[in-house]
Every structure is written in C-alpha cells, then in structure tokens.
Image (cartoon, rainbow, N blue to C red; front, side, top):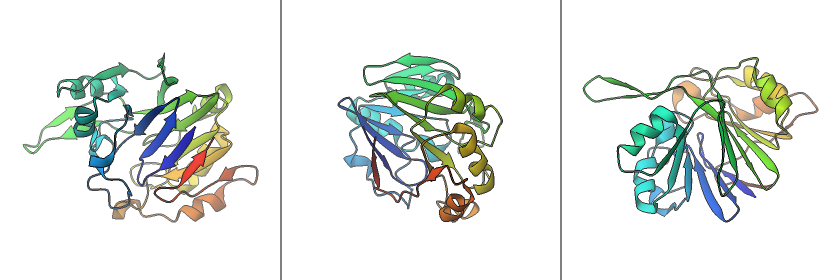
Length: 227
C-alpha cells in the first residue's frame, strides 16, 4: 500500500490496484503538487461538505467515473450532480473491493454556502478509517479533540493517522498531540495547516509536542509512505 500527502487534507492511497483520493481540494490549493486534470482515481472519499475538502470531486468523478464515498447527505447532494456515489454514515462500515471503509465522528460542520447567501446543510462531518492489505489508515477529517478518540485507538490497530493541526477551525498542535496519544497510531502526520492565514502553524512544533513513544512525521506535498 502506498500513501501520499498532497497539501491541506489531500491524501492519496494506492491499494489493491485501486487509487483512492481523500478530500481532493486541488484547484485553489496553493500547497498541493497535484493538478486536478491529471488525477484519475477509482474512488474518492469525502469527510465533509466544506469546499476545501470537496474541492474538485465532481469534476474528477464525472471525468473518471469515480465512486464517491461520503456521509449520506453529502453523497446525496453529490449524486444529484450526476456522480456515482455510495452513501454511508458515522459508525457504519462497508466492505468494498479495495478494502473496508468506516466513518468515525468528527466535531466540526458540513455545509455549502451559496452565492445568494443560502446555506445547504450536508450532514454530519466525519473521519475515515480505511482498512486494506491488513493495514489501517485513519484520516480524522476536520475535528476538535474529543475523548472518544480513545475508543478509535483502542478498537483499531492504526498504522497511520492524519490529524489536523491548523487550529481556529480544528484542533491546534497541543490538542492534536493529545489526539495522537488517544488514537495510538504507529505514525501520525499533521494535516490541515498553512493553507490559509488563520491556520498557519509550524508542523515541527506538533512533532515536538508528541510523547516520546509516538512516531510523528511531517510530510511535504508529494511525500510517500509505504505500508
């Protein structure tokens, strides 16, 4: 399994002959190394409906006939735009041909804000557990710290966790370091920082805040981990 990071919260996973993109915010993301027109994922997984996570989903999915896996309300909204979707919800899991996906809680919001000042509610935000090839990846999405993260760590042997550290809209470095302790992943990677002024952070500070028994790794856009 190959797992790469591409700025903000964009993660790519190649497993079982499938390419999976999580939260493909590419166009408008100055930190990414990707170009939307060059991406050909079989699957797109979305954590919630904010534009910096849905990103280029509809355009890519239509071009590539990608399957979009998302929380129910968001999946329904995306499906109305002619995209093939698989709706799920928090606590639910499903076995796909590439592996198993389970949505976890995330304390955040999920909506689209229209040009005519309307808000379209897109259901509850989520984190994602992706299980394939005997490995487990946890993408926390956008979330605050919450104590039930301990249950995620206790019930899943997590090999690699992606945790937001940007503060303001999500956990900051201090809370994310505690979240890393809760989820007990073999390796933790900071995400969702430095894309916009309100979420400017030094990722190395997050690494320094981790307990000695936790392996933290700062990934630059395009960096790859093999599990």
